Length: 357
Image 1 (cartoon, rainbow, N blue to C red):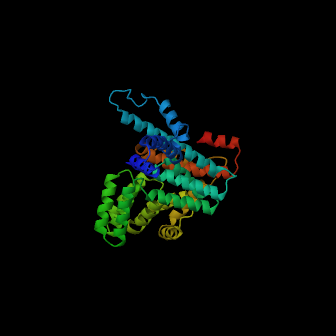
Image 2: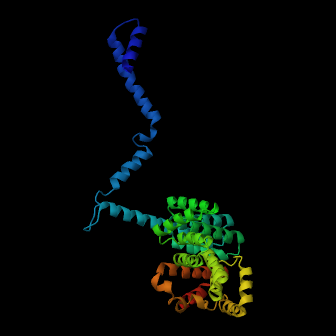
Image 3: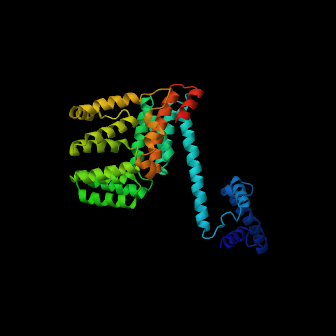
């Protein structure tokens, strides 16, 4: 249609002369116009462009047999998924180690440290990375209050969020219902979240808040303990469980141990008021507290007793929940070695301490 209309215009403008000359002119013009349009409008598809060169190289370098199963019972989908997980794990490990070097360097600015903490927050939240969480806990005792405060905020966000956005939407809906005092509807949401995600500690924490609002003390304590079982470094849950045991069950020794563990991880937690009330009720706990605090004082001559293997290898989580044991002991080791670096210990001293551990 376009060629016919141009031909008619050419013939009419030439006074109705030969049709052959018009068709010959159109035959020359149309290909030229199409070529110009392709050159100027689609430069990324021209031969020799970076995009085409990259695509050709990637296609030529691919082995057509690399995704084919080599074992009985495996499929190409499974092999591709395993390779994808391996790549993700490698990317996470490299990024976490890069952030760790940034945080440990004496030449790093405060802004760079905050950016490294934000990246660790991403990996801990998006991939559930244990290494990222351990490094964040290690920064809670940093002398720079802005850095330690940012690590605290990142940990709170990490523990409160699930890597699945659909679950986060349901949790937000449950929190909204709780704020509107619709406890039964909120409990249904949190109960389903905990059932469908049995390894996510925050699901039990949210359900415990519902139990507490409904005055179910025993079930509140049970879910808080289960939340700590799957997230052993969550010092916020430790404080909540300690307060509940102290006020509702009069379990002062267990409450003191929980406050002690929470303060050991995050030294700026506002629990001094609870400790004063606890020591007034049971004065002997204060003596035990001071004695243990003195025994765990930092020293470059030997590690504290709580980090030595014989003090934690017999714990329940060491045999039944090895991932949780790694999180707990790894966080304490990370904090202690961060203090060793801040004290400028030489290489010989560090090797000696490592040999003791």
